[in-house]
Structures are given as structure tokens and as C-alpha cells.
Amino acid sequence: MTEEASAVIHVGFRSEKIAETIQKALDPETRSPATYRCKVQVKRTGRMLTLIFDARDTTALRASVNSYLSWLRLLKDVCERVKARMP
Image (cartoon, rainbow, N blue to C red):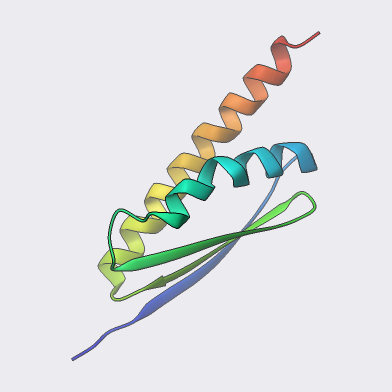
């Protein structure tokens, strides 16, 4: 039995620059995924990122969503800390 799973997540940021920076940081992960079981697209519209997940099963979907959300949190934190230190 073949099981497929998908998800779409929209995440808003304070500025277009932060959204663009995070999109560029995630780009290598989308081009060379760690597994063939899930493909992810990251699209940006202004300050909004849309993550589109297409997985072969719910386990792969859950693992990918968790990874990308962790990376988003980390990248957002880094961007905010860098911005806070700039004159």
C-alpha cells in the first residue's frame, strides 16, 4: 500500500530582507534533500515564506516538517541577533 502525505506551511517575517535571507539559507536543503522520501519547496512572497512538503509517508513528512521548522527558528534568531548588533 502506498501512502502519500503533504503539508503547506506559511510563515511571516518582520521584513522582506529577513524572509529573503532565510529562503536563500534553506535553498541548498531543497536542492539536495537528505532523503528521497520527501521533497520541499520554499517560495517567498514579500515577507511571507511558504513551505510545500510532498512526502511518501507521514513519517517522512513529520521528520521534514520538524527539521524545517527547527531551521526556520534558528535562522530567524540569527537574523534578529545580527540585526540587533548592527549600527
